[in-house]
Length: 425
Image (cartoon, rainbow, N blue to C red; front, side, top):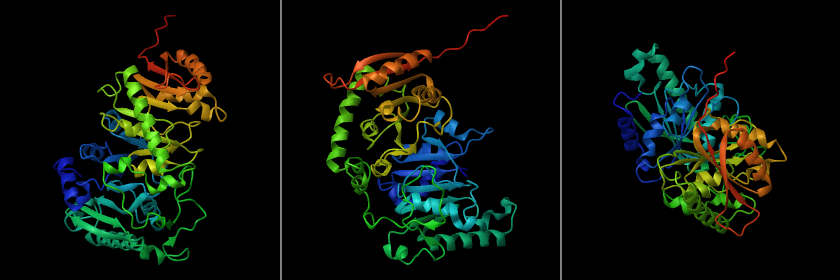
């Protein structure tokens, strides 16, 4: 879909969506991302994209994206909700992604509707867009493509979207900011309005629902600040996190600014071109990622599926992340991250699964010559160091930025590049 290159494609899209140029659009979702060229181009425009594609034995799209240093996770819009809270994305994109949007009563579109913010944009290129000029090459008829386009428009209108702009091969719909549109929907209309039986932000092993998610009354009509101002502004959703407040977030940011400065003194690779793909394995407000925003890195923020769900706050700040249970494998290919940061992870999860399994998963995710910064109680660090040695990591123990804190220490580990010796019989 990029005959003139992805840059020209995104230039046209930015002309159709002025918010892409002024910081209004910051977070984006690319479904069926291919090799993530769209997300890669947007990085240079200060738009952070979660590129999504399923595991594929023939074309490992997510692996290729991560090798390029572009944010991506394995995933598919099928039966379960994406591990992303509601109203998180400023924009979602599909370029010939082969998702049957109008099938199953529009179930897949309803998931896009859930994760988009009010006022957010859904961009579609490929069939049936521009069918008048393209249908010859799609092995179809003009009548069939017109019927598909009409059905798509009708379905989106019923979900409170409007056709915002259209030019050439690109069509853009905008999710309504008008509360009146959602108020007209009920649990018995078609499409139905979601009831309150399932939290709209619940996204870990939660089945997708055939209903339209109405915006929270707190967020109706309230636009987030533009990037980069939104990074430092406490969003409305911080108040729904247990113990969350604007002052708590500000304190968290101050803590991580000091911590990152200390980390860089201990690990000069952080902040250099040796580290690109970073994961914060146990974040709360995204403070660690916020402290690295000026460095040549991107951070995947992970919020525990068994703890307070603060991931909406992370997205509202203009950062990206996912829910996850560290007693399971993470949705990525082996050797795809340069640095893993774990703050209190083992103290929090030790009662649920064995430490060695979490560390083996960390070893799978981490590239050879990659780094892990583990911040935890000294009791757990002793065990971590012992297991890490068996994985052929080299680890050094350090004080945190607060040297007087005996309840928390650092373990900085370096994964070695090694190969097994040949055995001759």
